Length: 224
Image 1 (tube, helix red, strand yellow):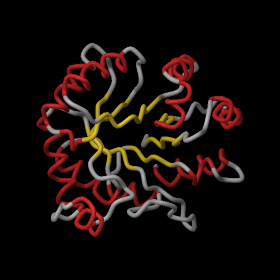
Image 2 (spheres, one colour):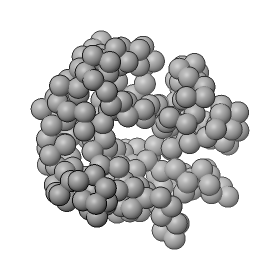
Image 3 (cartoon, one colour):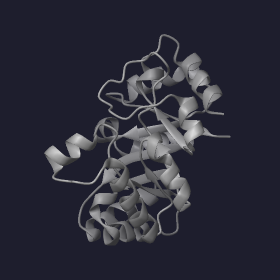
Image 4 (tube, one colour):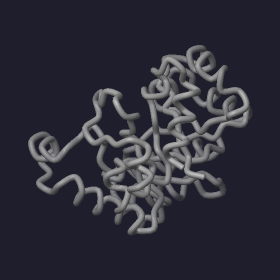
């Protein structure tokens, strides 16, 4: 079954636990990102895994190889399903991250180009002349060389991951009719399925819905 990951971008654990109450028995896959992790820390992740939730710990590490390796050793102890680094840190940094996770079952993926960026922004703001598609291919190829399991990209680039034999975790998902928000490269769950996404990450279309459980089930239905 294809997996829908709910982006739990809440201020604190109280907000998160209130949101999760109606999901009892469903145990959805959760993305824990910077906002709530920097408030609640590793104890929140331990609590969620103990309660049976699958976790994508989305901290996007990007530093010198030695620092990233040591940080990953700490993440390895949390027993999350997936965590990530920025592919822009280079092959040596990604290899160091992989070493830090040795002995754990955590999948390691690399963020390619954020779904808030587009070709124009790459050129005008980041001095990158290549297209998003070309940069994602290059970064994904580096992730494969470093021994990673997959990449984070928009569903539009999921075919690249599939071509390289990598899993793809794809944010930038909106249900039909929902606002794009701060995302530039977005698709629906059904489009992501057709493009070959392994996992989709859905935030506001679920967390901001009048009936989050119904929205989650709709995403699951459309993605499977």
